[in-house]
Image (cartoon, rainbow, N blue to C red; front, side, top):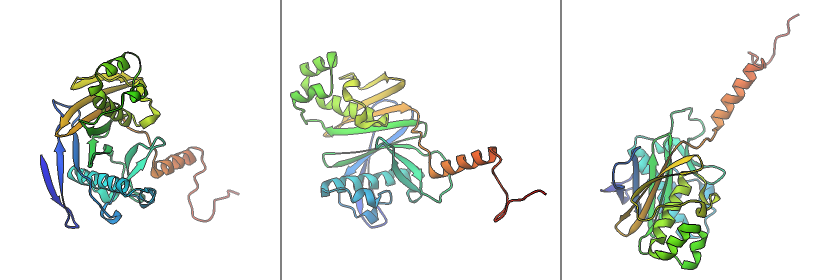
Amino acid sequence: MHSPLNDEWGLCVTIQHLHPPGQIEPECLVARCSIRRFSIEEVPLAHADEVSTFVMQKRRDEHLTGRWLLAKVLHQLGHDPSLLSVERTQHRAPYLAYIHGVWKNTPLPSISVGHSDGWAYVAVVEHGWRIGVDAEASERGIQANAFDMMAKGEELARLNAHPDCAIEMWVSKEAVQKALGLGMHLNPREIEIPIGVEKSYFSIGKSKIQLIKWIHHEAQIALALTPGSLSVATAEDRLLDATKVAMSKGDWDVGCNTARNNV
């Protein structure tokens, strides 16, 4: 389904809602739009300090388009992007948080953002799940001398025998890395992917992974889902925890300027 959206700045951008094959639980929303040039003022979920680190205009355009698309998808799902911020874990995994001053603890969905071949991709799933999306041009090749950087053992042997499956394998591993919130901190050689299978289930450590792969027009897309959520404490969480500790230790005095002394 294609949805031409006119935003508040009068821009018309077509958002494609992507539909993974088969029945997926939990329900998630996957969308893409073509990369275009935005100013940072047009993108409510962009951080100026992060955008300023991009040297190449191409990288800046990809980032801002992805954040713009994420805001549109969240709005469609009933969330107000102006109350939200995209933060990052120590492994650079993105997650949603309420901006400072918004004292809400309503659970927020998990997100994944990617960019490839002139497109920005966004995937969103309900709280309690983690999600990862990745895509590449389906006709893109990967040099055989790079295969041993992404696979080992029997999987490497299968890849050498079927090099045309390299892109399918690569986007699948990237989607899993994103869903687990680890990125390249999880060695792709440690992720074994069933090739030529549309939907598969497997485990990595204690994490149960659901992986869906499909081709949309020119793009090979992979979507990974796993139960759980990123455990990240907000500033409000830390303040509440500190308050509870102070109260439990009896250090909580009621008053503005003085503490009582009983004589």
